[in-house]
Length: 431
Image (cartoon, rainbow, N blue to C red; front, side):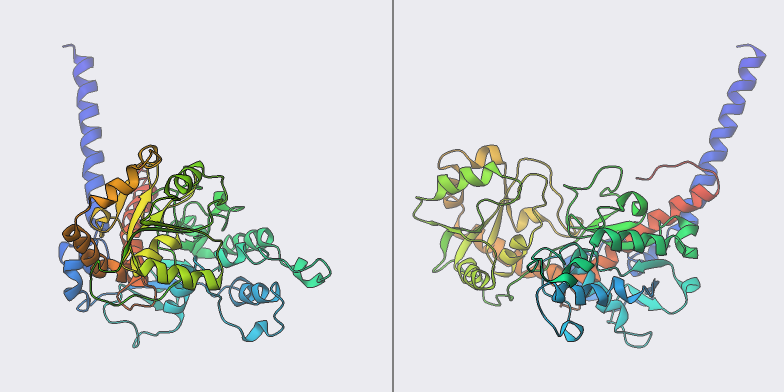
């Protein structure tokens, strides 16, 4: 080996050594110590850890932006006006399946340093310099459906609301904020649970942690499971607090619109295949208040409930969570990879059945498979449903809101590391 070659190898070795020394220094200076991992939310909380959650001594500071009213309660007022209500200013946030934005907002704005949920992983602060991350409380999902059911065109005021314009104005406002520009939004959290929420400005907020219902309609360069978080939809029916059991329950239920947006052929095949099955109840219904009540009663009297997401959509729809709260074992039919809320905490194989669409459409396949599930196995599924259903309940102090904050903090710990590496000139891709 000649001298030049030796010098070149020595240089490469020293360069690599310095890189790894700096990387590990940044890593261990960023990640909390092992004794504090749970308190910061870096480690996921399992059902077995719930007895220790209340002892959490170190909530993480979050600053909630004081947005102009038009981005919060102003959206609520426009929603009610678009439906003909003249008392829109006195009406509250409406019930709909993408309500995570409301419950997170409510959690952060109705408590103080002294009055926060016991064991909450986050606490709001009044000064942004005290914050470790930032929450942007735009009601983006509600904004996306304000004009969904329009009144006749003679109502001039209904045309005054423009969701796309609201999105543009929000981002323009954010881009003037010191802490947004400092990190390019990386330590910020936005909710865009409805697939159409923030759709016009995704490229401008893609660095932030986005809370979504699924990645089916999110471009790969705009969001990913490594950075963003799938959160549960709000269930529309009340919790069914009864003992587990299979008595007086039919085999299978699917209640909903067979001609869902997206033209799902799997739905068409399954409706035809199951229509004449004695133990399968198929309800050709669109969403309404009356139909929700009937669906609730039928779910509670069924062993299994079908969830058939259309192409490009997410299986984590309100129907899935309605089934969970009805103690009706979900049967998720999907031919592609799926994302579900809190997968690092919940083992979905213990609470649901997964069937490929190519198998589900075969004659008699689905009902034969379900009839072969033993009584004891059904009881095991139901028992697991009872244990984990709190994770999907936004009104439970130890439920969805708390787990979302745990998961967000886990994301932010990694993002903080990436920001430090970036500031020091290390181009390390963690996502």
